[in-house]
Length: 317
Image (cartoon, rainbow, N blue to C red):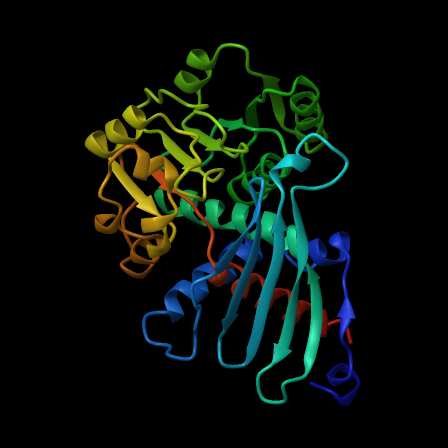
């Protein structure tokens, strides 16, 4: 690192942050981090701090380091902002050099959150989906719906997407975005028809109520990302139990034991479930049966995104 770059500490907006986090590169960086966890004691991701702010609002603090850089994500989560001009997630990621303690970069927190969450889903689908190319059903047409649409199109070659949302205008906007990417897209009016047709299903709603009750395909891959507290839920309890009985449930990290509302409310033994790290480190063969991937979020995903972003940022100078 040159003296010129050592003194930089730019604060990047959403567009500049996104440009440093291409989908496939980000999924690869997350996979690399999971491989390193096997024998790299310099990677440290303490439990995140979640402070209630009342009225369903929370403040999240998520630090992590790989021994060379250290980062902290500080974001607010305000569900009441849904449907307004204000985002539900706001905040920043601050990046430091471990050797010097010098601040190197400030990234847009919501952009990193959206992209790393979808990239984790992309990695899970690459590893665990029986039919990774789709078609894809997206339930929820907000920020995460858009991020997963882009990630799966770029990383899996998805060409057909079905979209369902409680908001007709949001759903139509996501259809237009899919079509602009060259995908075939349609609105879902009949959920039963959609789940019969689509081997890939992503649920990314505000998780205030059950949005998926059945997934009848024997080769289905369900990725549930909207619920990340014990009280939140997107999947019907009977669906979770059915997918466990017929196939496999994989959680993103061990933190799901106290965060995976869908699974906890279904009475599933979450501590006994394998994590994405297990699938990556043990080089699991692609499962033939149904898979539920439950994503709750983890500071390690932000660490991987930060490493990639900082590396690409410094290459510019």
